[in-house]
Image (tube, rainbow, N blue to C red; front, side, top):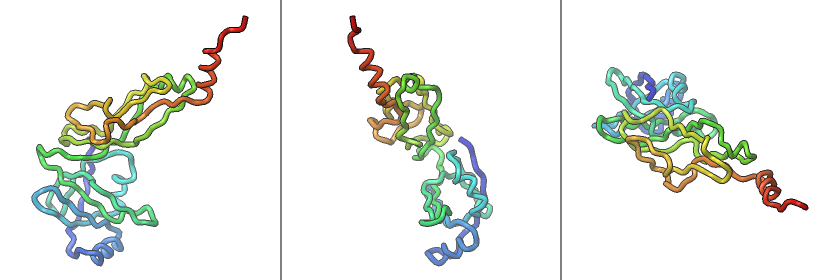
Amino acid sequence: MKTFSISGSLRGNVGKKGAKAVRRAGDIPCVLYGGKEQVLFSLNAKEFGKAVFTPEVYLMDLNIEGRKFQAIIQEIQWHPVTTEVSHLDFLEVVADKPIVMKLPLKFTGVAPGVLQGGKLFKKFRALKVKGLVEKMPESITLEISGLNVDQNTKVSDIKIDGLTMLDPQNAIVVGVASTRAVVADAAVAAAPAKK
């Protein structure tokens, strides 16, 4: 998994007034939990934007006034009107302790069902998984070259060593739907030949 390094500053004032002051200074109020203690700190919004506005997921190397932590982003709160991040929750990564996170999906290959006139549909952009951080890939790659019309891949079909899939097992991740053109072609093929 890729890492993203950033430095932060401890927050003295907690609560809504303190958070507003942090935002006015161009920073993001943050909290780190999951380890021995909870740490309240702030990050520079411009520096951190590179880690948020991307489909990639990162293992965060946090340096908070000389104290170093490894963490993952657990929750992002957005401003209700703008695209600005208003708050960040980080989960500290502890050795031998499984973490839960969403991994982005990538699709490779061409589905034969699409070449036959079907329509490819994707129900998920990311899947929730649980496992040790050293087992976490940067993304989940699904091969779709085996999908014909009316075939799909479910969560239960995806197996990754060391990871447990947390989304519903019968949920469809990607598939090829039948279209009117496919139905019409099938009807023509099934019709008896004229003598």
